Amino acid sequence: MDDPVTTALTNLLHRLADDHSGAVADYIPELAAVDPHSLGAAMVSVHGDLYHGGDSEIEFTIQSVSKPFVYALALSDLGLDEVTRHVGFEPSGEPFNAISLEATTGRPANPLINAGAIVTTALVTGADREEKFSRIHAILSAFAGRNLGIDETVYASESATGDRNRALAYLTLSQGVLAGPVEDVTDVYFRQCAVRVTTIDLAVMAATLANGGVNPVTAERVIDAEIARITLSVMSTCGMYDYSGEWMVQVGLPSKSGVGGGIVSALPGEFGIGVFSPRLDPRGNSVRGKAALAEMSQRFGLHVFTAPTGHRSPIAGSHIDNKVLTVQLQGEIDFVSAERIVRHLQEMAATYPITRIDLDLTHVTTVRTSGSELLTATFTDLRARQIAVHATSPDPSPLLELAGESRVDSG
Ligand code: DON
Image (tube, rainbow, N blue to C red; front, side):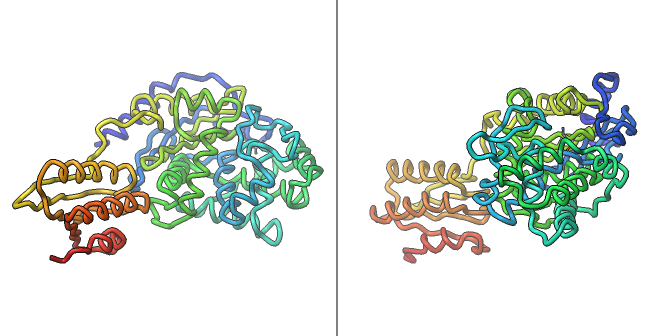
């Protein structure tokens, strides 16, 4: 029997089955050969659990969905400052194939339209086109958690007809922002676009971004957490081209579409999603893919800016016994939860004649610097008021900073 998430996903796809609007891309001739009826979706949680329905295991070419992942690789290779000398991170509000260069710098403003993506591909470290592509292929595979194939027919078809992209590359070359010969760079870019994926691959790739750069299925760290954050930020402002603003308002998920019919979306800290349906709207975004994501966002409540209510409290329990306040903490101690803890300790110290606080950290998973700074300042303040603070934890390793500061009074 299906689990309820799979059932909800399958029902949602059924409701879209009769929408035959849009048209498959044919400016790359081989893309017109795909089955236009396909429709699939997959979700992967940051815990690595997979749900999928419809044509979720059909392979299609990744196309522009590759762009944020290659951007992440360029950031890993060169860092944000150097990448930003060549390509910006502003939504250009223009179509994916626009001739779009900033008047002042000559850079493409947007790394997720073709001009910016071609410049980004050129930045990937590698002695020649083979090495650059093999590093791109390796990271796309690491994001997906399996060795991805390449559609040689679609690659050859785009290479034979991709003169607009070559023209974009020449323009960036003339501006001094393209780091490599046009033929080499566009060849790598065409290959990157011809990598074959399923919606399940896309969901795992997005879940890796949503999980701070660690693939939740393979447990491999693919990119740094900070690069995952930058990549998701750029997807949220630039990922749907000249539809990115409306997309963020209506659907509210950092996303990237491709003319192969795929769309990838991520809900940070929660889920990665991949959808596929080849018929596109005039902007090059999958018609039913967009509809599926819009409905998922609404039905499952996934909009990234929905303010959470009833935040899980970092305080699992608190009691006073003989002037000793014992507080059980739980979960991740970041700035937000530390603020709750600090308020609680201050209120208790102001209300009751306590002489000592015991913090039970058994169920604390992580202490972030932002959280420990607030707590240690509070401990100093409490100590000045003759209140001892102790921390207990069976495994102090992730909590050294906090426990170390609080091991002040052993009495
Ligand atoms: O460069 C191109 O035109 C294609 N290889 C990729 C474009 C694309 O996927 C735009 N997406 N919606």
